[in-house]
Image (cartoon, rainbow, N blue to C red; front, side, top):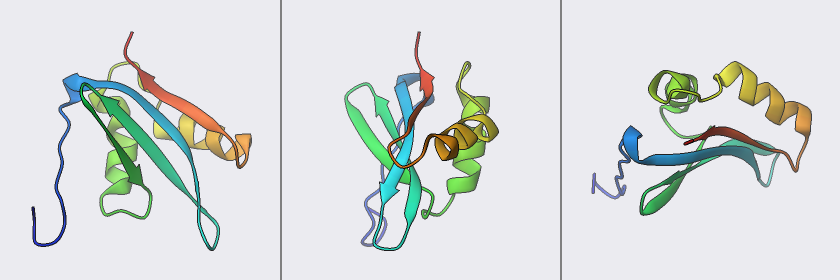
Length: 90
């Protein structure tokens, strides 16, 4: 724990799948990714600190992951119900 904030970490080698989707909110929607890993899963949203670095850095850490410019445009073009597989371990 860091103060009142829980901390978590997932090793890149443990990531099985990352999926981007829309998270409906009271005012508008935000991008969200689900990270599925061996034994756990987490959500990371664009309103969180470090989002830009995380989202743009995925393809540099995971071979075969879509670059942010590609998956974010696919998500926007797909509308409210869209999901995009950013990475899936083969």
